[in-house]
Length: 308
Image (cartoon, rainbow, N blue to C red; front, side, top):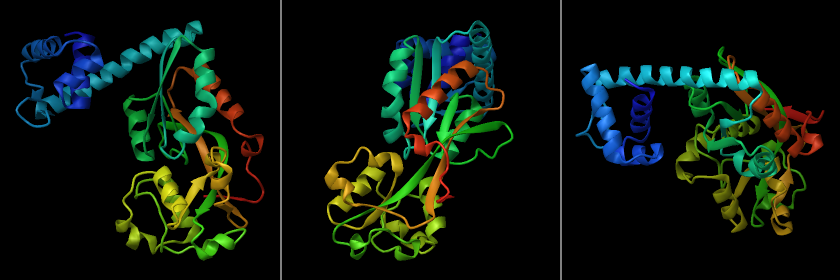
């Protein structure tokens, strides 16, 4: 049994497809298949049901994969211990972000950070909050940027910055003429919101007391804030956008932005890691780069803010 074989097993479990797993591991499919088969013969158990579509683990395979994940995680920790002890900035760092944060925050710090740390491979992925926590606990990622406290004894969060919510409103809406928008002005009608499971959505429903939106949500199954913004620009309805997104808008688009009345609904953006996370030097450098990339006024909560 080798660590490489376990890596191949975890790749197949991730993609549920031998060819995709082989491509991910940078080997040929016959090589990957043969190595997994050799492991199965050594263990005396079949790990994957190759007849199922997609490929799925057998009952014994589920337990083997779970243990393989633990072994892989501990192996990574051993490498990280040495790298942290020597002050090395080499290797990979796996960072996840919410889909409502990544498009607006990533361009602010990522290019310069990567250019300044060429030996460090930063891998970024987008995940919703629940998935971020799962990935942190399983060792799939090293850190996550979310918009709430982690609320788990094995996870720790540090505040990066505070971000206000704004209303994005079409010219056809009666509220377009309002300079500020009261939460009571907004109803579930003609309102574009993300699906359930997005904390961005949940925080605003709570702030605006939009319980009725839950009844109407079935009609709104589009995918992203950017999609909703295009709908609004086309003259259809209202949506909400985060503060960092405003800087990316044209002057024409900015004319559709309205602030909430006081207190401004604001989310706290948090960097989350496991409590036993090792590579603190990289985390400190990354955190500093992110904080420096946002406007100074976003680094501390304003007295007029309401943290949702």
